Length: 117
Image 1: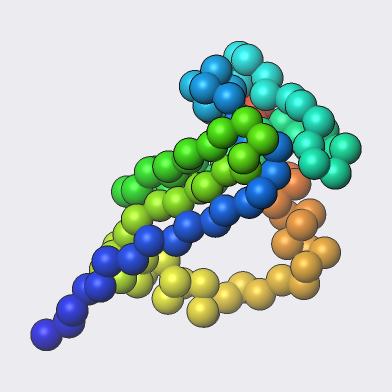
Image 2: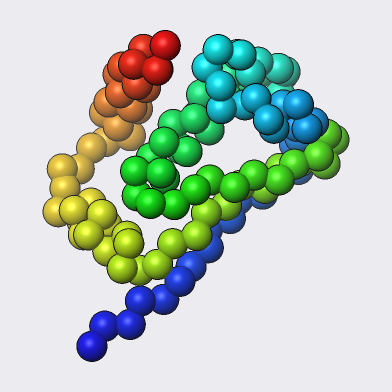
């Protein structure tokens, strides 16, 4: 008998955070989410859209809590059962160098964002 243990993966930061309006609209491609970050680099929020879409395809939801000037917390819940097959496929490969993975992701992101417009 297999036991499937629930888990939560949470990532927090101490960045500039988001106000309520930004939280409500950050996943909308028709309202670009652009602002200066803590390192003076502009972010588009598209990484969060990609993460949310990937998590939803695996049956879970990206949760976010944030406050302006207080940073943000991003998390999702899952069980070993939900993710076992996915992780097993990862272990089988294919394996990429960081450069190859970044290039693959760039191509995938462009196609993904184009499909959402």
